[in-house]
Length: 292
Image 1 (tube, rainbow, N blue to C red):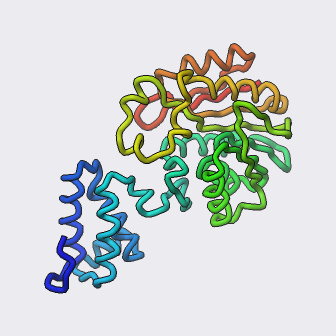
Image 2: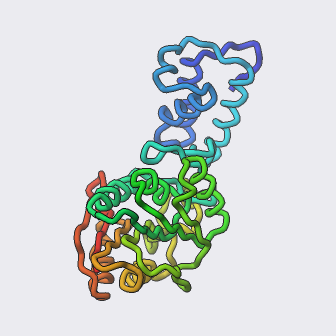
Image 3: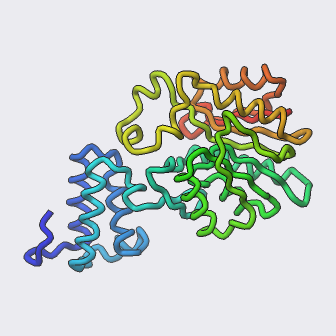
């Protein structure tokens, strides 16, 4: 990519070149990602890009874009390259210390917010197990002002990111972040109206066949549960029995339809009842809701 003053790069030229460059590097959505990085550099909307496609870039803008483009071409996810992503209409800082929030997890949050509307209490207590970036806990706190959320994670680095996100989104007063290994410890509070979680669940062949983009960049701690792919669901079932109020609710993301029967069996074996299972946008079983 020529960045000297000898060549003038217009928006339209840069998008065309960078799309082809990223495609050649194996990026699945080169047009979308090139636009996203350019919008970041120019601090503008997608519409602005196309309304000003003849606009030449300044040398500093071109240099900043080139840096982003090179990092993305190295196989770093664009969200880590930029340092943020969007989730539930809100902006979240992300780093290699936390998973990149997925659209499938928005389905979980949307369902949680629907269920919270049915609770009549003036204050609602929610436990978020494995909070990571805090996207679930923070989106719940934003969407339901009656909620007080306890957000747990074993990773200090992840908690630093989640606390930053809570501050940036203005909900630090309603979320209590705790460093805790949920497999060996339990929260002191034993009266949660709801437990939510997107736990590590990628195991077996699914782990072995995971794309390099995910495997080499996102934290294994948040993805891989170990040889027992249901270990976190067993723990969640135990927490539901000991920490949910009467008629409380456990809602969790799962790895897909292949995991659904196993997760449901773990829950029912603990005396929980399956309330609902929900499919994601591709038709895969993605969410299990259980009650005590």
